[in-house]
Image 1 (cartoon, one colour):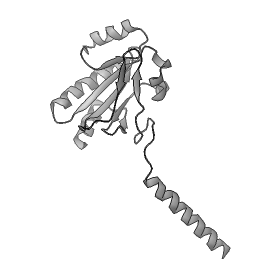
Image 2 (cartoon, helix red, strand yellow):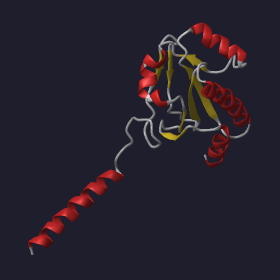
Image 3 (cartoon, helix red, strand yellow):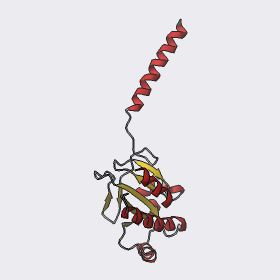
Image 4 (cartoon, one colour):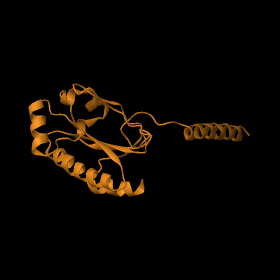
Length: 168
């Protein structure tokens, strides 16, 4: 009889915990389903807000001139976003460079023909709050954030971005 009572109490407790998780709200983090951490880039007077009443998604891409892969991805993503915005999918893209020298950042923007795009420079590099909040120690990446500020994907390729836009 005691065994049945313990089982009943454990079952009720489990159901109570499970019911609470359905109502749980996302927390700030860097995984899909988390609220994207707020971004404030030092020296640019820039705050990036993810909540968009017009339904627009936001792609945040982190890159640096010293990381050839992230730099090439930055150019490819900008080209893809321009194509998508010409169609029906509206994505705002912000690229944040972690090059510590402004001259390197500006030279790279010119060489990659990205003048006039939303390129931001975080001069503190890997010591910046943004770098730490987005846990970029293991490599520079990007995050696609929905209009409610929730991360829906990370490490998005241009092809994957097009595919995701068809689902939005």
